[in-house]
Length: 506
Image: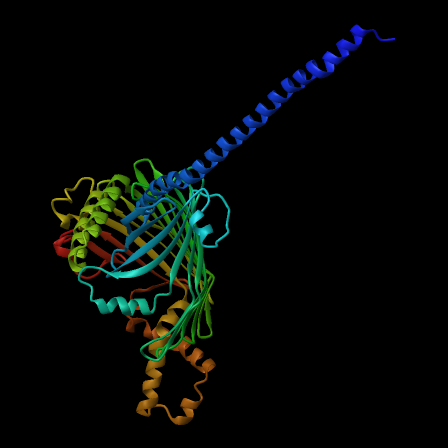
């Protein structure tokens, strides 16, 4: 039985102590929720600030990388790339690049719409719901612009036959990498003579690496042209390149492949490939150029496969870089085309004089072309040795610095191919003059014509300026040539007059 004291204690516990304890437990719980709310609020503010500031920061980085990319493209290209304008905003920027190609009266103006990373918010706001993170997204489009002194009408004429060129570039989130997808739209146009140009479009990708490498992949189904001179078409063209620009010089490999080319109704070329390779060799550059063809058809005759390999050695790197810088400087001055060409020609002569000091070599390391009967082969080597001559003071000494040798072996079937047009022309002349009767003319079938060519071509050797120099050598014809001290020899005999007086008395 509970005492009065026990009842008082339980009353105090339930009515005084418990409410105090429960109140003390509730107070920390309420403070904990408040802290969470405050933390979440701060985080949300930070997210908003970062989201707002990120495009601005990425815009600054995009501008730097844009200028680096323009520099990278100018280092080894044949043209110059100049930024005409760059306007940076918060979410996006606009820029203009002027591309100048030597030898052309027109320049190309490329306009860029640049969306800042990490998310292209301006594009998302326009309904392009691509949430892929990137440093920047760039949409580019190219138009022609006249160079100083170029008639305005020329721009319209060129633009008429130039399909739209667009590109999409993606900058990586970090580093200097970028990837560009290029598109040249298909196009059909009528020509002034009633013919038609059918361009089937082009697609490609350029990948710019952090280390300065540029990897290029381009391809097109081809182009065809019909005119009063006959049809012409080129099908399935592809270009690949992996190169690195260094001070205006591109090192690396490139390859151009043409699956088929038809010239008129009678000439067809298949499997044409052109490859180049340039690599440093100490203070010099070694460049190898290779031409290959699978088959050439002329009428009913087939030739090929064939190969020509050229090698350039001991090209002074410093001289080539200096030349590139000077030519780019001339191109940027906006001079009239004639003046620009004269200045470039003067710099080219200076370059040749400078290169001659290291005695560069041009060598045909392989020449092979198979015919129906036999194979054309040859070799050649040219050396420009101005190491002991003051060529810079007297450019005429280049003729003394140049020396070389070449030899060629030609099968009879190719000699016949050279002479056949002349033989056919004479037979046609005989028909017109009545020397051949109509009955005899009707008997000139392709097989009969072929037999006639086989029988009479030896008597035509002296009627052609080239074949009259050929010397029979077994089943082939050969020819040799050499150049020494300004004197040109063919088959070890002087050919023509010594150039500018050099070679007399030697």
